[in-house]
Length: 182
Image (cartoon, rainbow, N blue to C red; front, side):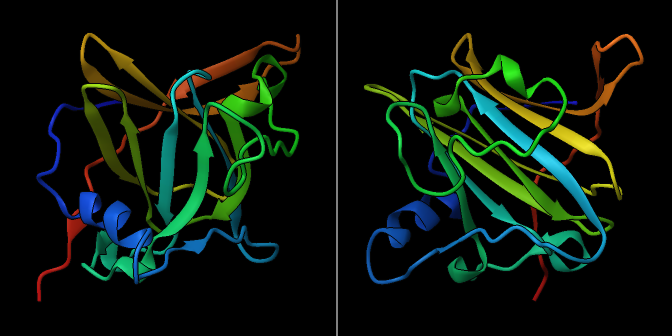
């Protein structure tokens, strides 16, 4: 599913980025090594810095407004090394096509909501996308973040390598992040 967002500064995620560089700290994502797992690759154009935050276990599919629950997954683009998992690959199908500065791969918890927030800021724009989906055990996913026509896009796809070696991408349904009701 192609998630598109053109709004800026109207949600709590702008505050996450601002607060993460001040008194509040955002933890670095630690991939699980046991339990039900899936894998995800986040990719973006290599020339523009893209920050990726995740919330691996949103209760009941919603998130609270606590900044410290979000975790840095990667800062992609520009220079190596950067924060998080930039340049990390774990053998997912089709990953050989990407340069280290534009990719990050990791295991993620499966069978529970996994929320992501991606933000890109240029000279005269800020563009962000939030999404949630439920990864399934043993499945590989790819979240491809791009800026087209002034709008941010994130395409989340399930990856599968065919017998002939070709990698097939099938769209995955996602939704916007919802805040828990108090």
